[in-house]
Picture 1 (tube, helix red, strand yellow):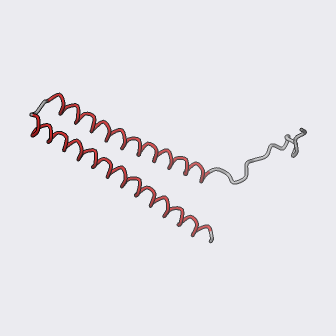
Picture 2 (cartoon, rainbow, N blue to C red; picture 1 turned 30 degrees about the horizontal axis):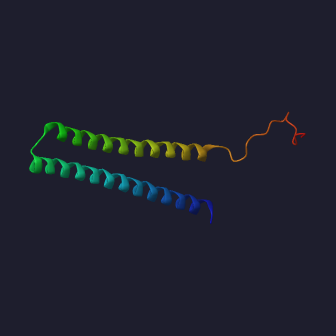
Picture 3 (cartoon, rainbow, N blue to C red; picture 1 turned 45 degrees about the vertical axis):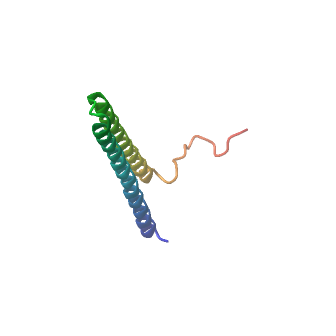
Length: 105
């Protein structure tokens, strides 16, 4: 496999990982939203609407959604930065001409 095919394969894998990760976060956010909505509706129809309980459910749901989504994008951006830095580093580290090739033990 030559360099272009390897780069294309790595790009395809990275794109697939990004899409799958986003899909997982999106579906999790929808599940949290659905659970919060079900809880609010259950409280409203079952026991009467208590504003404090509804506010607690909505606050915790949106905090969880915000935290999870922010964490995903933060981790993804750091991963992209690491990949970018790794691609631009030299293949062989420079050697110090004054340092001996072998070190005494």
